[in-house]
Picture 1 (cartoon, helix red, strand yellow):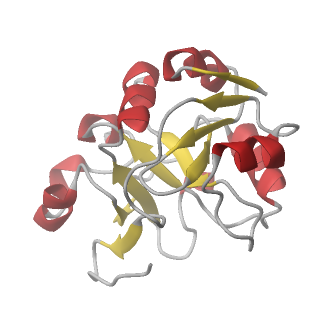
Picture 2 (cartoon, one colour):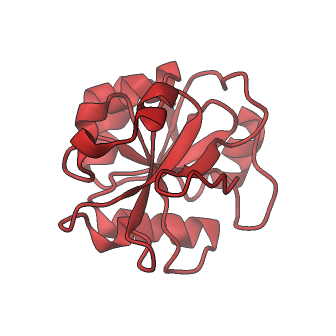
Length: 182
């Protein structure tokens, strides 16, 4: 695993590699969401069954135009962004199937204000996959040393940076029903 800056991580994302990075609350694993092989690789790293979808983080709303109808995003969603709330929003029909919940047709998205995520997404010019850095069912990883020990053989690049001030992953809410899922 290479350790370095968000700017240098962009080459790894473009090549379909997996990165680790700090988020608002826990360390995350990420990749290019349009690369199905990379998303499948995260499933293998996390030992997570196929069929579950991951959330995406963006630095600005205009990075989401290929995925959702940004003109119809609820006011409550817009007022919570940028921030630590992930929303389930109806996906556009051409959104890659591995990003969309097959039962509901919703995609999980957050516009973040975390400086590392903002830098990653600004340089990548797209959202990225974001999932907690852990093996499925295990505790979230909160320390850089633990992250590197756990993922040194499976993650290609680790982005230096600090965790935010939250002690847990983002809140997840459904834009249609308003229901809080996490």
